[in-house]
Image 1: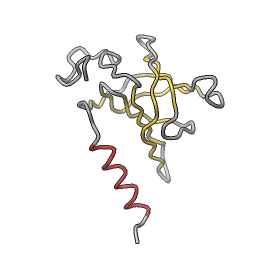
Image 2: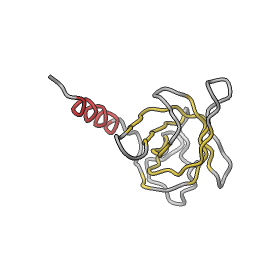
Image 3: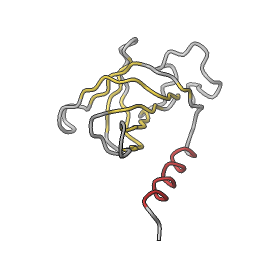
Image 4: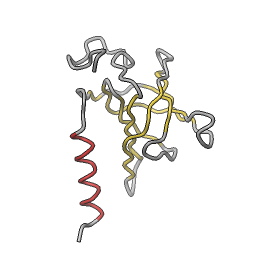
Length: 123
């Protein structure tokens, strides 16, 4: 018999193994919102926990589900690439962690002066 914790751990490990570029612990102020024709209005200001050339991990209070399309706006640059939810981790207590991936890699989106070497435009 497989318990829920084992299933959750397995999916977490699978998500961590699928990394295509180095992750950086970085808090970037962003606004996350849902495209108008893809469900109820959703607009939330938050900050990233971890970023990469391919997406981010952040905390959201709004309900999102895997494969859902969202836009993430970098507050300082006003850029807002489309992304999709790839992972949702809801704890019994505390905030929900949400991982998103850009529909196209965006290594310059986070405005990091010296990004990791694997954050190239061809990533």
